[in-house]
Image (tube, rainbow over all chains, first blue to last red; front, side, top):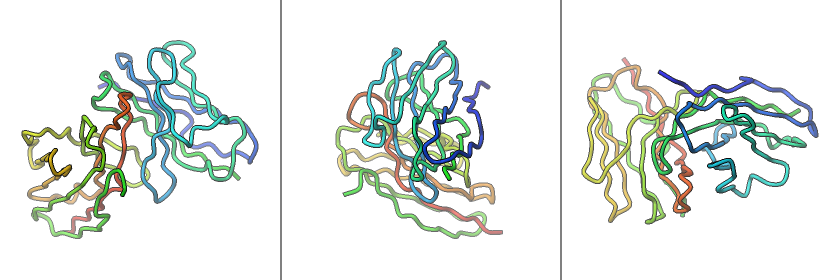
Length: 113
Length: 111
């Protein structure tokens, strides 16, 4: 059964550094998302991506964040200058239908020191 | 009012018990509804979609009441392996498919 994969599983970085989180969605999915979950809190929507462009972004997704799908398989989330409050689990998700089921990757735990 | 509201629990039940979780959502324009399961420090895993007609998958039954904006999940004959956090999830009204999560209800099934 195909799965969403994410790398790295854990990223430790210094405040102010850039990080790139990578995801390989399931091949027949068309809609892609990034979510984050701060420890002990609920899962929060960051950004949705369809047809090679952002379709919606949340208030959290400010100018420090960007997403790309450079080669038709990888889907990346970049944080340009990390802050302490960016420490969280970041989940990539995808789905075949716009309002359909979404399948999540195992997440990247980002720790900003 | 929270967009998706759940009783956080925890619910502590013995094996074999029946347990019910409830959820309310605030946006009447939400189109799709789901229950996800999340184990500690893992990703949300889809448990089932929820339909107005109600749907059942083995020991799990989900119901949706659009008029009341209320979703439920019933687990029969609880197993130790059902111990997890159950997330009530709805789509937003923006037509992008984004998911809005409740904070989750924690279930602990004890022998």
